[in-house]
Length: 109
Image 1 (cartoon, one colour):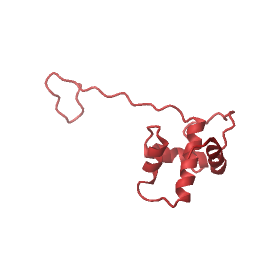
Image 2: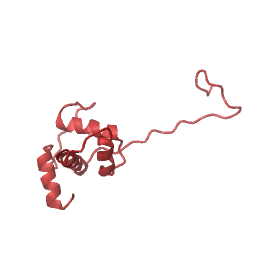
Image 3: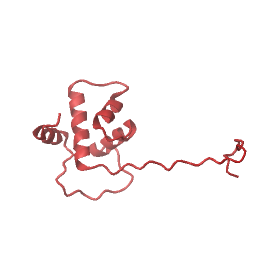
Image 4: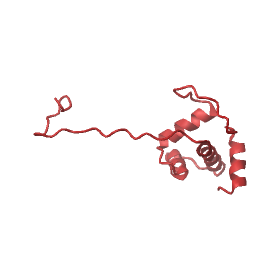
């Protein structure tokens, strides 16, 4: 009963599923860094198959390239998120130029 359909069960062993890893919600600073990284890579002419993987690596949050790309599309308004979001009150602005200016002022490259 513990084996998947069509797969024989090992004698006396059951397989346990790993609990899915849940990432924390995107923070304002993480979103600003994402926007700044995209702006910087596009200004530098970066493109190609590993574009979002490079952004994901530079973001350093452990998020997948697909998650980073999807969230970027939500931020710029080309994709809708699954849940309605409560407006943020921390002063976050989704304009990449504003994000880049704030990061430059903070000394983040």
